[in-house]
Length: 87
Image 1 (tube, rainbow, N blue to C red):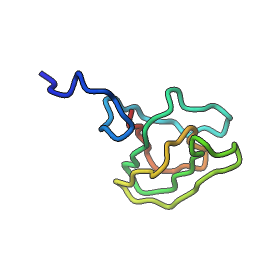
Image 2: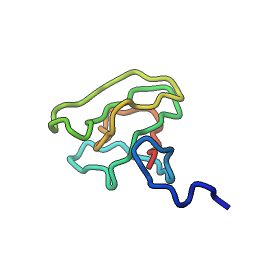
Image 3: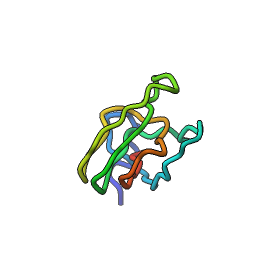
Image 4: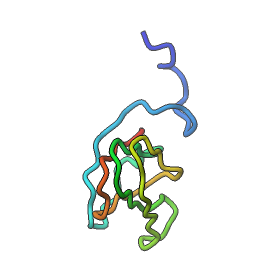
């Protein structure tokens, strides 16, 4: 039994779902927009935070275990690491 099943799903709570994200060069937003993303391999993470303009890309060199500090609405095609959502 899940003791947290009846709790409100706030942004500060742990995620309830995860999915692997395929990087996209298109203007397709993640749906739903996740709380954050977790990188499970070393590489480059390029994403557009939820309130940034389309050209406001954040690009970082990350190590496995990195958790983004923004809510990403789009993962860009220049991403080379494996990305999982936290929803």
